Structures are given as structure tokens and as C-alpha cells.
Image (cartoon, rainbow, N blue to C red; front, top):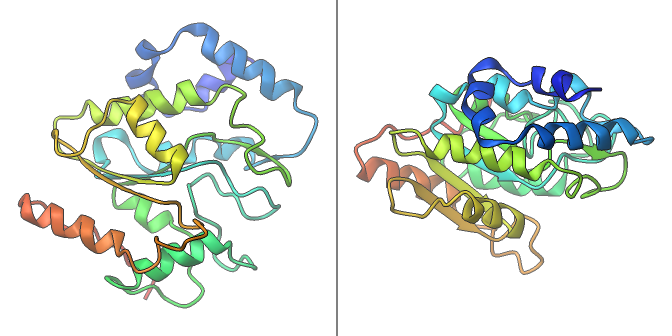
Length: 228
């Protein structure tokens, strides 16, 4: 894979927004690292930028920031925290997220893919867009960070308020690097990661809290339902 081939996977609207923020060497170095990887990589290449394909820049209303894709075969589908419907076992972090969503929305049995959220303007973005099989965090330092940071800055540059849901250390650091501050035009909903051992994510109702803040701004709440 070359740098041009890697860049070509990015939808045109997003590519136009971030190209000016990144030196050519960013994609060149990242392509070299990915080409050198001998292990199986998830998700498949065509889904590396799926989050951007499912949610055009002009449609983004919220961003949920994850660390990297799930590292087991059949789980990663290019959207942070999302796995295809029917995949078992369901990752524990996703189970906790769906349990919180059930506090404000209907989550149909068996629904685990978050594609419907992406279609409603929720950008499901990992800070690293690939992972080696069985090695969570294995691609965090190979060069994805400048790319995903640029994506966050592109969203933050929009004139409308956007919600940034930052769960965990990696997500909060990404928001900070992008210069996004709660209450300064945008909403930042920060918390521990869903798998934090102390469990303070549980019953924190992040989706309800975000919708309350959108309502107070006179904006339409986000529909967090999945299926019927």
C-alpha cells in the first residue's frame, strides 16, 4: 500500500477537510508501517475509514471516541465500539454502552451494530483505525494519531455545536490535543472508559445527559435507539 492508496480510502469531503492539516510524510510513514505488518489486521482495509463513509462531515452531530478496533476476528467493522449484529460473544465494553443507551432508548435484542447511530450523525471514531489480530492497542503508535487528531479538528471547526463523548484516557487526550473545550461552542461529555474497573461508567447515563444538554441549547436530541 502506498500513501496515495491510503489517502484514497478517505471519502472526498473528509479528505478535503484534513489534507491541509497533515504533511505528506504522515501518510507515507503510516503506509510503510501498515505495509510492513505481517499479522492479520482488523478491520479489513475497505473498512479502515468506514466511520467517515457512514457519517459525512456535514452531518456530524456527535463523536464517540474509542481507542482502537476490537482485535478478534469478526468483531471489528470500522466503527468505534461497534460489532456486527449476531457476533458472539459481545465485547463487555459494548454491553455496558448498550445498557446505558437503554436508559433513554429502545435497543432491540441482538442488536450490537452501531451503524444506525452513524447514519444519524454520530461519528464513531477510534484513535487508531487498525489493530493486529489478538493484540489490543498494537497499532496505537504506528502513525494513526495525527490522522484521527486532524479528523477531530475538522469536526471542531464546524460552525454548529457538536457533542464529543470522550470515554477513557485515550479519548480525553485526543479531545485535548484537538483543542476542544467543553462549553466553548461544543459539548464535551468526558468520563472513564466503559471498562474502568471501578465501574463508574455504569449508571452514569451519558446518552441522557448529552440529550439534556442539546435540549437546553434548543437542539434536537439524538435518537440512540437500535432496531425495533
